[in-house]
Amino acid sequence: MAIKLENVGIAVRDIEETIAFFTDLGLTVLGRDTVSGEWADTAVGLDGNHAKIAVLQTPDGQGQLELFEYIHPDAIETHPTLPNEIGMHRVAFSVDDIDEALKIAAKHGCTPLRGVATYGDVYKLTYLRGPSGILVMLAQELKKD
Image (tube, rainbow, N blue to C red; front, side, top):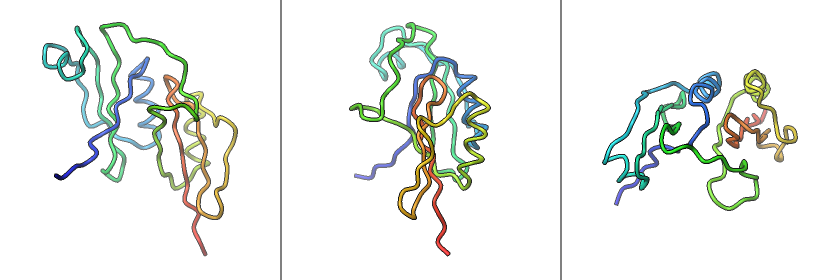
């Protein structure tokens, strides 16, 4: 059986704010819609499912995020995920300039949880809290001379 990762879905408080954050980092909006009805209830397993959705793609064409903002039922606010919690954890992106990516994130009020670390001579990386508390990892591969 062939299998392919289609996208990562993330429920958000404010879809416009979240789209702005990810498009500023370089993702492109592939499509937007509002979904509801029996098919949506069945697929998601939630009665009365009604949500705004947007699908964003990474510049390399390989990765996609599906963002959704619930219209009904009301979204449930939880504590932001901690780095050591079990379950859906984070979304990670490779960037060619971590300092530039962090400047863009800062324009959206998003800063590293603790700072930027260097993993050996392989990566500079950091976790930050994005819109709706999403954990986002940014990693820049270090070039060997």
